[in-house]
Length: 240
Image 1: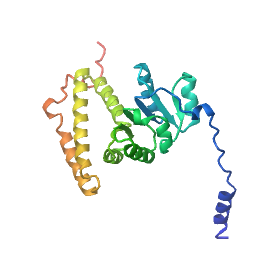
Image 2 (image 1 turned 90 degrees about the horizontal axis):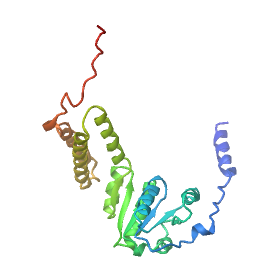
Image 3 (image 1 turned 120 degrees about the horizontal axis):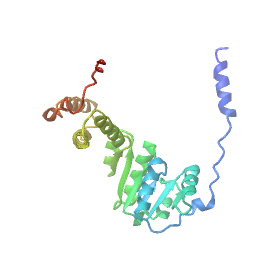
Image 4 (image 1 turned 135 degrees about the vertical axis):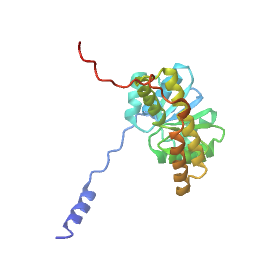
């Protein structure tokens, strides 16, 4: 009786249906496009925005994606978008995408481990290419930097924009909010750079984090948000 649940679990694993192989149309697999200045790995939300900006500027690029659904969605918006099915961890795919002729390789996939492996492979095969990679968190940033990639935190800049919206909503002018957000960003980037030197030492990282919190409390001491900048909510005046 005691082992019955284990037997049931084992049998369920054995009879579990095998995943159906994805059918990839031939035209998605044939990487045939102009020589790119930029190669984008991962055509999800981030990759599509980057591609739209490049397309608007007339900059030739090639997009690589392993999701047929994402390729179909992108091509449904524009049939001539140079987006193809290809695993960036395969050297022959990188060759077909002409990474050797590109100036930038953008890693926009949402899997941190895949991003690290891709950055490592591209750096080894194409040391002249500038790599810009999506980073999940601070530890991910440190590892990407070690691989020679420029790391962009996926939520950092959007969080700063939301913070700015809060500050202006509380009464600061755009200039005041921009100044404070810029100062916070610079402070955080300095802390991140300091942590990179010791990121494999947990105690040292914690110490830099504590010091950063203390510095943050006095970051705006020289220009405290004036009462007139953030009006307090006052009770309504009684009717006369």
